[in-house]
Length: 172
Image (cartoon, rainbow, N blue to C red; front, side):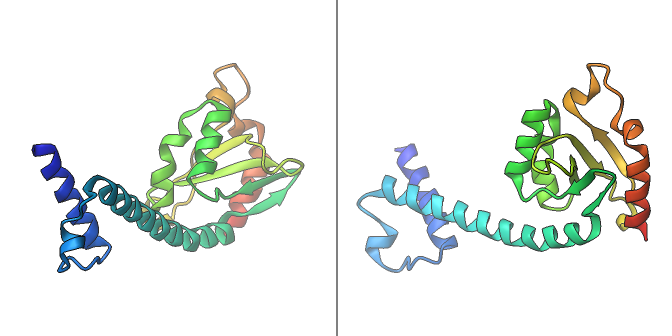
């Protein structure tokens, strides 16, 4: 059937990516195709996730050196991964979770503004501009709970002194 053929083709693809020995009949044509397909495709995803996590660890170190800062009772925190960004968006009821993949691969830079007394509690989210090879580093957008739709002061205004101090430090 067409479904079995597609399952076998997907398995062959995954097996090749995982460098299975496809010259062996029992590997190339497994009796338990559905189970072997599921294991192989899961292994490919795990391998891809591990490679992405390794790449992000390098970026995380760079971002930490470049942006981590504390003053005036506030601090800038770098997300440790996708889950941090998704959690941020869920708790603050805004759309930053949709930026997680872009942040992980470097197409966006997401940072968290926190109270020093509670650095793990979502407070304000910052997206930095990265145009011009980061020579013009500036805040692209900054939002707190529900993007301040409840009338709360803009974090850009509410934390202007801290943000100026921090950006001066970043640029130095």
